[in-house]
Image (cartoon, rainbow, N blue to C red; front, side):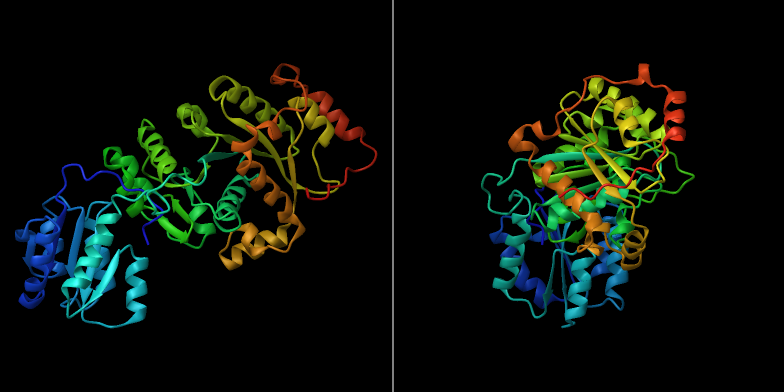
Length: 434
């Protein structure tokens, strides 16, 4: 279950530790541990509670084996273990309950494997070898070269509510399912992010732990801390208390991006626009900046400002303008006036579809997954294709079709307003891009 993430080195951590309830299981385990080159003294008598006690006062090993035989509520106890276990530890559980549902629930909670008693030497050897392989295998698990060049895209909304997060989660799902690329979704709205919510997942503590302890971030941390959405998609997000301000210099975010480059084919960053100001280095290695906007005066102004900022601070990133929530006769300014003010063409347009948005929310799915057959999602597929193709065409498909440079100096609020008022016929929403 861990093949798509590339863990990092062990560092100074102990390679292995076990907490087993009965002597017979310990007698089978110790010779296998010696074969693996580990210390048999690390095989301790005692179950999950002993493990929790021990790890609350000592560092976690790279691989931890715990016995659930004496646990009355294994899932709850595993959650208690997670509170004291360092992120990145590979946990193998053993127990006496032969229940498929328990097995699945344990794997979903982050356990690497569940072994049924009585234990055998071959069973233990295979499980420990697989756990050890987590530290050695690159993404894909074959140890070879990456099949795809890594592509990172940041999705930024020019204004609140333009639909940047909806597009970010849809793109992440699209890359993972339809393009079959291993994908990381990083939601950097630490307090109010909706990435996990859109995927019907709990956000977990992965991003919070990364911010609080950036020195812990390595491949193994990524494997442990990210929440799996499907076989090819994992998300890192947070739901930090709103009375806890964001205290970081951005180092954690850079380290996460670096680990994602090693572990995944694609990275999608849901990036609140204020993060551009606080952490400008976040876009240093991003390939595409998907700028989500709408046909309003405020969005036109801020599109110009952000494009100018990108030119100065992220010259290697290719901007993509996506106009969302297009609807007939309801635009504050015309498309032509908007494009004239920002001095470049809109790359893609997505029509407003409130029913489709409500359907996605009810199903707990991304917008594109919940509305696969809708015309509204056709432009999102085209956006995905363009981003995936950036490594092949060097961003030529996103080259400016208008003048270079920002138009902030020529931004005329009065002329845009008068143009909107004088418009005799409403502009119809375009058909989705094919």
